[in-house]
Length: 255
Ligand code: PGA
Image 1: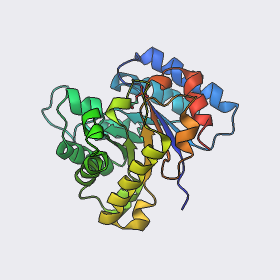
Image 2: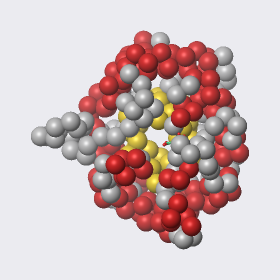
Image 3: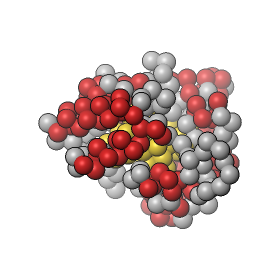
């Protein structure tokens, strides 16, 4: 079973609409000179989605668009929130769900993550469901049990077809934006355990199709090591996705 690698840039709360348009254009220009095997996605803040989407469409760019969050309802009196169908309308293919920053600063739980995962599928898009342990959990040697629980609850109630399309990003919280990373082998162990958890619920053939990304201080210098691991199917890239050349160097490492 060959899974197509995915390299997704999470621009977090960094780019204005104009900056995002420039960045995606720069990324596209660099990608054009390459024979890229991986699927490439960018996830601007909500306010940048329209401009980036328009550029992708007009210039026929082979870059997928993703959002960083959404609500689980398809409409309603939820001031400030964005519904999945609004993102689908802007031609988003992906929505990041349950990023550790959302869990930490916006009170997201495995249960709300699950509602969002299902809502994103229902709107015809693919969730990139983020999981990962804190340093305390890691030091207590409870990483796999903790992540398995996040995956079990987060991915509950999917159809087998949806489960097969799911993308899970394993992002140890202590590795995000810190320059620290687990060893590639340790990341692969957790990725394998994520796949096994999904296999126990949806069956191994479904789990073999799920893409598991690694995220947390991925840089051009270390990307290849992670991407070479058998259960790691790409990366979710934060800081290094904000510069076109470093992001594209990471994409190059995904072959
Ligand atoms: P980082 O962020 O690459 O800056 O560590 C990754 C993420 O938060 O998705």
